Image (tube, rainbow, N blue to C red):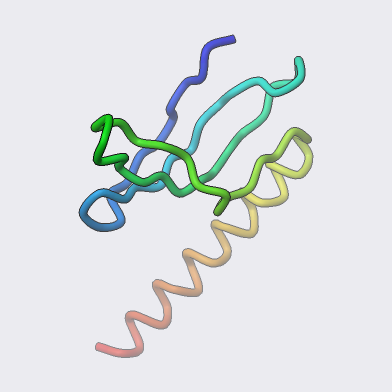
Length: 81
């Protein structure tokens, strides 16, 4: 399986966050990781900062909690206005 980038967001110059569907030791997984721009090659390289999830149940649980966190953030932003 070839790595498939599902989401990419710039953090700052030469840095980005990627959500990638990939395979490791024959198992598919979602990988959420920081990347940096390697100035010698001009390519982005992964850092050790990130997580890999291979359990669909864990991904489902994380998705629910992320949605809850987004709702809490929106409420806090609305209060601050």
